[in-house]
Amino acid sequence: MNLSYWEKKSWLTNVDFTIIGSGIVGLNCALQLKNRFPKANILILEKGILPQGASTKNAGFACFGSLSELIDDLNNHSELEVLELVKKRINGLQLLRQTLGDNNINYKELGGYELFLKEDDVFYNDCLSKQQTINTLLKPIFNDTVFSLKENSFQFKNIKSKYSFNKFEGQIDTGKMMEALLLKVQSKGIKILNNCTVESYSGDTSSVKLKTNNFEFTTSKLFIATNGFASQLLKESVKPARAQVLITKPIKDLHIKGTFHLDRGYYYFRNIDNRILFGGGRQLDFKTEETTALEQTELIQNTLESLLKNTILPNTPFEIDHRWSGIMGVGDQKKALVKQVSNSIYCGVRLGGMGVAIGSLVGKELADLV
Image 1 (cartoon, one colour):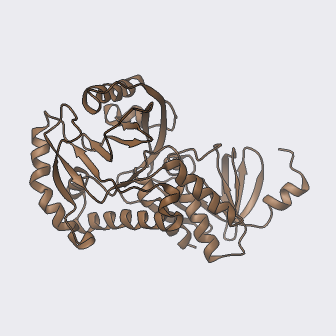
Image 2 (cartoon, rainbow, N blue to C red):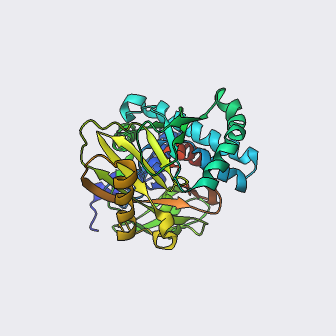
């Protein structure tokens, strides 16, 4: 790229902190660094026109885990570890709301529901039998009962007559959240360069040299916040996990309100602007969905449409308006990976599909490593 003197001087000289990724983590990291180091020159590099992974593509669930997810977590983690996971998600959501304000992200606490398929007797009964255990575990955090049972008031089909209800779960407008976050970051004098892919980097004790598809420059510190794309830049245990989504055209008198989890949380849907947003299904083909390709597959899209027609909106005509995919970062552990990689390089990745809940907090923790 043929850069001018002015471009080099204003954007690529004396850079204190460079962040790769302009998603929730990267932008919050930049804000925290600016708060701590007001005079710092901060640059964010983003390979997409908009944040490329999941930050502008997620379903907008402000949640900390459904009943079955927390039960499953207890099978693989200690009680203390599960409590810490829940606390991080709650603290992360509080930080997000404090940073941007509820109006700017259209936060609504309409409650969250978990639906159980009609034929899933063993799984359903197991969840019911452990509901009190989970409520007891969470009582010190919420000072209230979190999970209860509700009748199928939304008239879904092919599910158990009662579903699990969590009154503390909310939803946000993902687009408004990212728009507000980008505006806040830029108002602080933090620079963002889009369509800029980092191809390689090398660091020593005092600086890091970066090579992008457009130019090369040097920064004092480098922060990698690319989550599902982390393996392209880091030798850490992070796998990409694609999430496919569709959304209907507006539905007159839509009666469904809230956030909903189905089939162990592998499917999820919600209301937004009189539409139903519905995503998930990667358990149908885990290997194929372990990819960074922002595409859709016939298998998953057809399954989503079938569930929409036969379970979620059985008596309501609808049309699909749009489809898309996002890329999450997952691993063997549910805990996000926030660490110093070398003298001048840090990473905050592997958010495990909980980016809305913990992204703000991971961004802060990443900045706090300096």
